[in-house]
Each structure stands twice: as C-alpha cells, then as structure tokens.
Image (cartoon, rainbow, N blue to C red):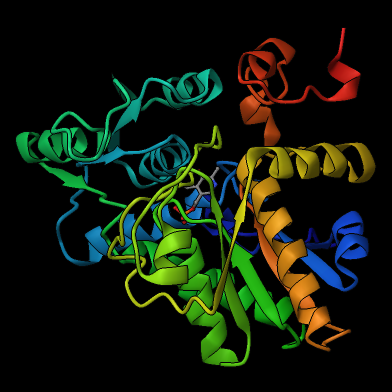
Length: 336
Ligand code: PMP
C-alpha cells in the first residue's frame, strides 16, 4: 500500500487542509456550512500559510539569505508559523508579542526555538506597540527581515494562491458564500479575491468581533470600534495593505458569547476543539447562510475558516476561573 500524501519536504505540509461539513451550524442556517480545518496545519493555525508565503517572498527578493533572521510582531500564531518555517529553511526567528496573549502561545514559541520578546499591550499609535517594536528590531539586526504581516501582501497572496483554489476544488466549484473575521485581513481579502476570481457571484462577508473598527467601515465608511472582545488574533482598527481592495459584499458583527456558544457546540456535538476566532467565524457563517436562504438560495453553500486549535487556549477559553473573570459562560462540563 502506498502512504497517502507522501512528500519530500516538511514545507509541503502547510495548506491542503481538509474541509468539513459542520452539522449544527448547517441545521441552524438551513443550508450547508463548511469549515476549512486550518488547525490541521503543522503550526496548528491558518497563519502557517502567511508565514510560508512571506518567507518565500523575502527569499525571492534576495532579502533573506542563509543564516538570516525573520522578525515579526504577532498575536502568536504567525510567530509559530514563522518559527517552524524558519527552522525548516535554516533561519533564526525573533517574535515580538503583547504579554496578554495566551501562555500556551508563549510556551510554544519558546519550545520551537524562537527568541520571544514580550511587550505591554498598547494602542497601535504607541511606538512600543508590538508591530513597531518588531520593525525596529529588524532594522537594528544584521541579516534580518521584517515579516510585516499586516502590510506585506505576500500574506494575502498565500490565500489567493492556496486557500481559495483549495476550497474551490474541494467543493467542485459550487460555493455561494465565504466569511471570516480579520486580524491582518490576509485571510478574508486573499480568500475573497481568490474565490471571486473563480466566480464573482460568491458573496464575501466580513464577520467582525466587537472592539474592531471594520464592521462600521464596511457598513458606513467610518473606522469606528464599539465594545470589546477577548478573541485573540482578530479585531482590526485600520485598513491594512492586506485589506485594501478586499471584496467585502456584506458584514456581520458577532459577540464573544455568540462565538463561544459555537465553540462549545462544535466541541460537544462534533468533536472539534477550536479557538474563539473560529467560533466567531462560524457564527458569521450561520448568519450569512440564513441571509442567503432568506434571499431564496435554499441550497446555498457557505465556507468559513476554523483558524486554530482550542489546545492553544486551555488556560483561557477552557479554564473556568479565566472565563469567570471575563464574565463569560463556562462550558457545562467544566463547571465544578
Ligand atoms: N484567528 C486567529 C486565531 C489568528 O491568530 C488570526 C491571525 N491574526 C486570525 C484569526 C486572522 O487571520 P488574518 O490575519 O489572516 O486576518
């Protein structure tokens, strides 16, 4: 018997993730809701794709040479992707991260061999913000490149060239809607652009958490945030280069409670252990499915992104004490 998907390079393990029909969300929407299993990437998140495309792009431009260093500011998942890709390609990695992100992400980055630099969580305008700190470090370090995931469009290119064609092929070219939240915006913009290149009628919707400014921007042109969210990796306050020209047809806003309810149900009923951005994405996919059905498209098919694994949030989303301090509901099987 031949082993399936045998590959000569660990880099090839990034992408080509499975697509799974989500039963509860499909029943709630009245149409098919599919989840792209990005937790199946080697670094267990969607950001492995951006990390690989950014590193390849820097190599192609001659900026990254053997023995060089990749430096990035990240909520964690991009750093994990960069650390793995850097190891596989013979580079060092330095990751700058706000110190309010999950302990699992910090421990993981250290375990992978990245140099971890923690900074206080501040507003983007603050010169010590993790993005600016990472840029400065890259400028000061010999042989280093700054990954710059927010404004380096190699990020969204990863989704134009991989995520979108995979989804298109996996569904045999029959898809009606796509939605997800934005951190850098690479996933929504890149997958949206890539899918629309196949079929411009595919409805692309942004699902924004509270505390982000994009819902208002796409609804009425005003970059204005309301409320807050504990979701890691999503929630953008500006139009990054990756978001520029994103083909957003409609937008939803989802609360942490709505997202957590899908995290709970997908785990309890479908055996999928996910992070909160995945739950918020699924809540958005259900809303998009319901909208398409209400518009008469009863056999609609909607795809969203299951961004990362819940194992990364055992100390937060799956920890009753943490949930209680945030005023969020505790999953029934964790109540003591
Ligand atoms: N979910 C999680 C858990 C993430 O880490 C990220 C990346 N910041 C996203 C969603 C959003 O992806 P993107 O940066 O492509 O918008």
